[in-house]
Image (cartoon, rainbow, N blue to C red; front, side):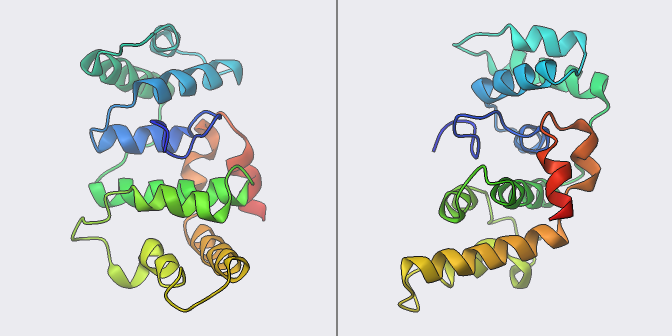
Amino acid sequence: MAEAGLTGNSAPYTAEVTAWRFLNEGRGEAMVKWAESMVLSGFDSPALFILLGETAPFNAFEMNELFDRAAFELGLPAIKSDVDAVLLLASVAASKFISSFVSPMEALDALLLLPWGIPEIPREKDLLLDILAYTDQYGLSEEQQDAEADRLLRAFHTGHPMHEWSSVEWSKASQDDDQV
């Protein structure tokens, strides 16, 4: 999967970049794509403009510092724990699926890369394990697996709609999919 996680050819959501930053996962290219999308969407911040001008090879310390400054200048919501960050990344996967940015299996692929091993994540509410339970184990066809992944992603999205992030997302898709 690309450095940007769920991004494919599109920029990552603000929530996604912020969660990866909280988990200390520097993703320079993703930060630059995000900064570009933010500026093109009308967001304004001195650090955001500097971040937009960064090129590879990326200095992780400098990129993180610039992102932290941009986050402060833009008033991004705070993530309080590793668990919150991982659940936010899962919410981004569900939101990108709902917005038709990724297929159910692309969302699953992204979920597989998340650090689910954090002990505080309640296993009975684990989207990844729920989806994995329906892949190959029960002899379901590909269409049935997609349908079950679709159902689980939509249910997860309903419980984790990302309202707090909608005002700071470059893509209004995160607001629109709250109404789905």
